[in-house]
Structure formats: structure tokens, C-alpha cells
Length: 482
Image 1 (cartoon, rainbow, N blue to C red):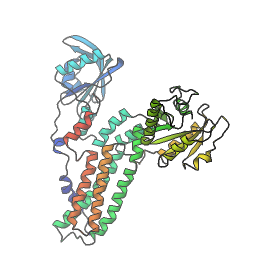
Image 2: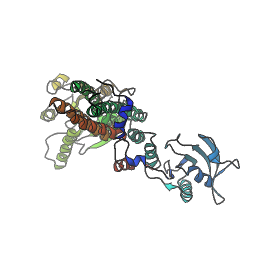
Image 3: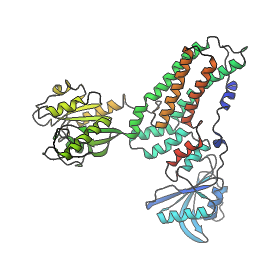
Image 4: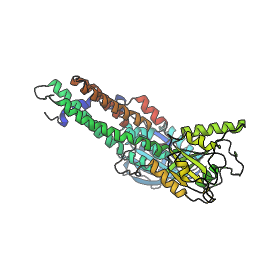
């Protein structure tokens, strides 16, 4: 079988170039406030584009007379004043970066001024009067993408870093920002591209490239491609947990200690606790951090049969919360016997992620662990929400359930983005269709159609096969000035 060289694959790759709007993109000069309008000690305004230095020079009066910003070295800092028609607006420090070695790959100026909202607005208005345009949300990062400095998955990771709610989410976003995902995707795309090039070359030049036995060879390669796609897709559930947190419902019959458990996990008296059964009537939701993960904890009404119409609504909401939860903490009062309310709860938990918590371990035990686990075969712990006993073991168990073997960001890619997950599934489905075509003995040109679909789907992740509308939608979700 002939070997396809890099030069020969280039023609196929050219057919799937970046979208035309990326190639034709030309920038004007934009400006925005890059820090919150909260009256902080320091405020930052950012200017990016071909006229950045010219606009900055119109408003910046350096402490050292005669200094021209455009003539200074990149990555240098300059002290002076922002001046409007001879009036000093603020004392500032200006940082300059020159294309292509900046965040946007364009000439960039950052003005560090005092962080009052009035002074920042006044400087921004001045920059706009001198020729800059107000940046759209996310436009600085959008320019970094359009100018080829980062790919689309890395651009999305920028917002993930900003929105990270826990340590794992932050590490995952930083890893993706460094290119962990794009490296995996580009490697798989290159392998698919090679097969497309070989088929095209063989069909165009059968004298030099033979397809004899090729379906068998391609089938073996497809097994590896699909395995790689599966490996990335398997991380998607952990990726969702990393990004969004674990939706956790605390359920049990009344007075089992659910609210006490929530308070113990929060470390504060957030939920009302009394000796009267049925105190909790509605769902109380709070966020906690546990071993680097986010948990959205739902304290629910005690589940029991009741004629009270208000309590009945709370019971139904508790059941719905359990149905939608990623994790259920089933709290059992170990100082009391199991009753029909417990049996009703147990009946609905067989196919759920459940941890059984035998609470009130500081009191004489009436219901033992095996009495519950023989009816509901789920992991169980003795705890005391009052004293905190068993809560460390609970943390260990949750971590092991949702982060199998822990998380390493050295070489593992975690799909935390639904758009990426959808594109990867589409790519895998296209590869499966190529496999189906081989099994049916269809001609080789059928393979190329689905291989191209897989190639394009993977390109949607990195931004090499996306439309302008999608790009605009993605960046519209960014904050102003980023």
C-alpha cells in the first residue's frame, strides 16, 4: 500500500479551511473597561486594534516629556496622566503590547487608573471620542480567536475560568486553555484526514495507490478512532460534575435529621431545626464546596403520608428533587424503627445514586445498617449530624463516587462543554457509519462522505468548521471587556 505524504494531504485539508469570515476578518480599534464598576482601588481599560497607540497618544501625557508610546518596546510600563484638552482626568500607568504578541494578537494598550466608576467612564468616553469603538461582550477574546492565537475551545475555556465555582472546574478550564482538548482533537482529525486523502488519491490514481485490502485496514483504524472518541466522551459526565456541581437531595422521613445534616455540611444554622416532625415544608437550596467539588444541596420536606395540603405539596417536591438529583443522601433515624414511610422511600431509590446515612449515631441504635442495606443495596454510613461524626467518611465516599480514581489534568481531557459533547458524539456516529459501510461492502467513496462528516464535527470543537452566527452567539455570553 502506498504511503501518503504530508504534501499530498494538503489538498484535502485546503478544502476544509477555516470559514471565509475568519479569513476576511479585519479589525477596527475597540476599547472597554476590563474591571468591575465597583469602586475598587485599581481600574483597567483596554484598547486593541491598529489605532491603539495613536488613540492612546492623543489622551496620554507621559511624565517624561516627548515619550511616544508607539516607539517604546513591547511589554513596558509608562507613568503619566490622562488628559482631555489640557485637563488632567487621572494619574495612570499605561502598559503597551505589540502585535502579534498580545492577548488579541493586535497592538494593545492597557490603562491602569483609579478604580472609581466615574473616572473609568470618563476615560472610556474620551477614548471613544478619539476614535475607538466600544467593544462588544467578549470581543477581545473573539479577536484572539479570529486572529488565530487561540482556537474556539480555548476561547470558551477563558469564560470557564472566569465562571469556575470550584478548584476542579478551575483546573479543568486552565488545562483546556493550555490546549489539552485541542491537542486531542487535532490528532484525531489528522488521522481521519489521512484516510480521506488516501481514498481520494487511490480513486484518482489507481495505478499508484491500491485499495486492495484497504477496508480491513480501515476497520482496524476505525476501532482505534472510535475508542479515542469514547475515551473523551466517557469523561463528559465527570466534566459536567466538575463544571456544574453535584445536585444533591437530602431525603428521609420527618424528623430524621435532614436539616441538621444540611447545617452540619454548611457549617452554619441555615435550616430551621426543631423536635417537631414536618418543620421543613419546602425545598431549601445551598451551595457547598467539598474536596474541590461543588454540591448544590437540597434540604427537602420529610416524606410521609399526610392530610395537610401544604405538607403534601412539600412531599411531592421532595420526591421530584430526588428524581432529578445526581446524588441522594437518604437520612435514616437510627434511633427509631423503620416504618412504612421508610419502606416507601426505599422502594423508589433502587436505580439512583444513593448514600444511606444512619443518623443520630450518638443515641442508642435501634435500626442497624444491615437492616437498611438488605432492602436497599447502597453504600451506607453511621453519622451524627449533631456531633459531626462520619462527615469526613461521607466526603470520601462522595469523592470516590463522582471522581473515579481522582482527577489528573496532566493528560486527561474532560469534556465540560455541552457543545463539545454534542460535536464529539456526532463525530463518533459518523465513524460508526463508516464501519457500517465497510460491513455492507459498499464502495470506498461512501467511506469518504462519513469520514468528512466526522472531520467536520471535530472541527466544530476547535472552530475550524463553524459559522459566523455560532461564533457570535458564543462570544455574546462573555462579560464586557474580556
